[in-house]
Image 1 (cartoon, rainbow, N blue to C red):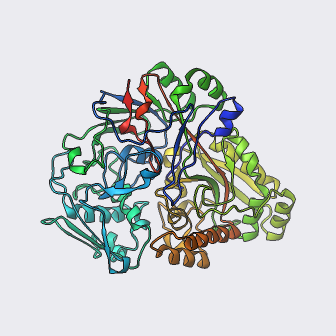
Image 2 (cartoon, one colour):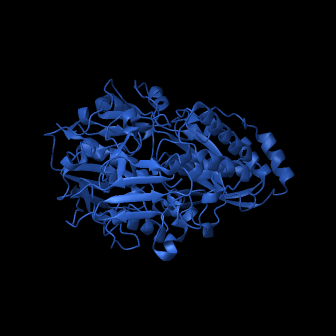
Image 3 (cartoon, rainbow, N blue to C red):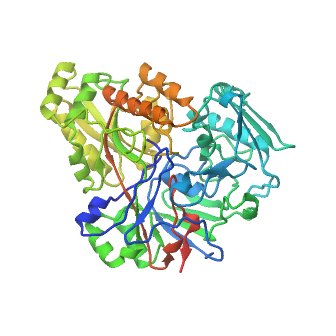
Length: 559
């Protein structure tokens, strides 16, 4: 999906290169996350250390930034920057390990008070808050921000669709279900029905207040004033972003929940080539490599710079979507055929052995996970299903972006589609516009590459966001398959109202995973792993890898 994509490295690849690693799983609704390293040092569980400030942290970033507007960005790259720039009312602890999934007050004085059978959330804004331009932060700014999300057709609007009156927000500029008193700071949110993940939704960047006069259009290159410890000074797409301290941020107001950060400035150099990025860090031109270490350089990099590599496993999925609204993928037989035709182990090899094959929607670290093996590789059966479908010989366009090894995955898929009876070709477009392109119904993308990294540790972030037919939108659509199955929708909607993830509820989520697999809107094929690589000037005793936001740039230290 749009968010949570990045270029990864797995333990298997390091092992193949003779590299010893300590890497632990992360993600899942039980707040599970852990970081490992290429040695014995794990990610720090503390927030930023005092007295560790330094002038400039230089990052060799990839080209995956979609937006630097909190209402529009939906990538790991964008959220990784904005986590320390735009603060929601509530957010997550800045620590590594399981505690990173703990929700704490940010702009709000305390966590929401939930009443009315789980349908009413009440919070109070902290007093004295200011944006980076010096203007006061008001309770009504939260309401204005959610309205703005609807006006700009944010990819996050589906998160707020349960708020009473949200269906009229774009038209009227108001949401009746949100009331705010600027004098007292009190904010009240009324939902149409209980929603078990609503606190997590309030902690997303989409809910981070911006000034009410922020234009209802992309502000990436004219950044909106911020509330966090940092502000975006400038952004030149595909070239560079500069992040500096917010002069009006006071960490003492946040009860230790939001660190002030160590770098005074972050220079984010956007680099298109993995090898170039690696070399920039090795040579000292940049301090940190966001890119995957190229597989042909893994062994040599580990041998020489092993103590500068951190490895971790986020909750993620790589998959191919099949658009159930357009031929030939409106035919279940065809979708099942593609699932049988794809050799998931072969796709892992496409990525240099850097992953584990999977058929599930949920990652194996989730307690709701129950391994599925419904479509063992069987090319002959796939050909039979295509012949029986009546769609044999149809033209198919396979979509992907131009980044990393991903085009190799769709090249494999294109070849497989041709083998089973279609006339298939690839369409590769720029990574900066890929997700909004395939997420636009006007594109009518038949089949293509997607990946997903959790927004928050709950099954709803996978099934409700990606596979609930009730949340299909015309643009910024997260459900690329346009999967709209009445039974699956009903099950998701029912489970959404469950206030906690009991063993019984978890078993029902596992059943939803199976129901989706039976209808085959996707070809899930791999769970992957990451590396973070630093130059020798950085002090990795301060390294924090977060359960949701991955490497926390603000907490790093310099020797």
